[in-house]
Amino acid sequence: MNDFNPLIPHNALPQLPPNINMHDPDLLVLAMETVRSVSQLRTRLTLSKRSIANTLDLLSPLFVPEAVASSGIENIITTNDSVYIAKIKEDRELTPTEKEALNYTKALERGAQIVNNKGFLATNDYISLQGILEPTKKGLRNHLGTTLANPHTKKIYYTPPEGEALIRNMLSNYEKYFNDKAPIEETYARMAILHYQFEAIHPFMDGNGRTGRILMPLYLTIQGELPVPVLFISQYILKHRDEYYKRLRDVTENNNWKDWILYIMSTTKEQAEYTCKILEQIQKNISTVKQLLKDNFKSMYSSELVDFLFSTAYFTEKQFTEELKVSRVTARKYLGLLESKNIIEKKRQSGKNRYLYVNPKYINILLGA
Image 1 (cartoon, rainbow, N blue to C red):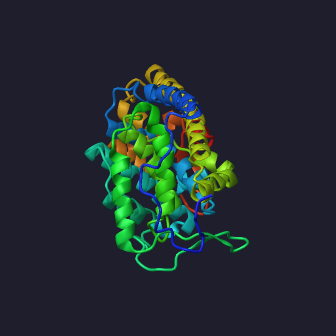
Image 2 (image 1 turned 90 degrees about the vertical axis):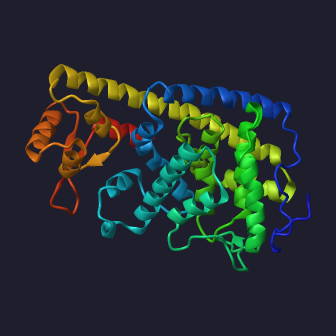
Image 3 (image 1 turned 45 degrees about the horizontal axis):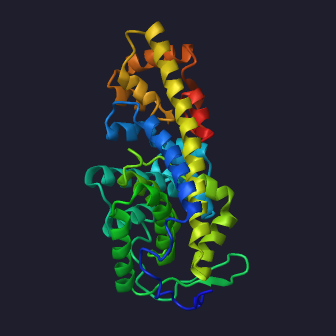
């Protein structure tokens, strides 16, 4: 037991790295298992010769289930399907929870772009991502009195560090550890350590948990473990939320790093394997649609058409026309042909006098992600 007091600002939060045995046999065994699982995911992600930017566009629909789950951890409740549809709504039509989830996907996409362009993330990038998540509450905490409490009992369980200068100093230390090249056997332990540290610094008034969870796949991308940040663990955490918070607090209160690291590594391994299966299903679906198009509509077939069908969960005739740069007459002809082979379905949008189109097999894969 350390001298932690939940009622006093945790200004003595130790800097990184913590004093733990990275060569603990239990950690090393699970680390190597996690490395293998993520390596299989990396292989599946690099099967295509597409550019990173193009791959991100194609995989961006996978960001939605992560956004919904990560928001759910913070009791911001919506559904994957409603967020996919929200992407084609006017801003004034969106509910607050839809806006929150869409902001999460935008922040994740922005983080991926920064990593792709710069190869690292700096403190100002963390602040920028939080500003996308919480546009009305953006920026570092700069006033006193922030506490974290049980929402039911109101009992305070943590008071984060106070003072913007101290928070910036802690983030500077965090940034260095985040961007340092890690030995492969330490990468996933370090990711767990970084996630704890970000939550403990609690640098923002709001959006700390969501920002911290966005940073995990971005860290793996910086470390070269993933070409694009599509390994998400929020779904697992949402299902095991009590354990997640218990393990976090056990580090703070008892310096129990080992169980926390094992929890995050086990979660990462499981989600890497799960994501591999989702990507396999998507890639099979793409191959099937390509072959259908080549066999039946050779003159209509193009890589741009296939890319559009597998980067937009729901779309309108107008979007289809604009993205493929065809006339409305041609668009309607193509859409009718795609419907005739059950590649897409047309559905009336609830509350609107227009139709939406969806690739049903693809959306079913995404809704299960």
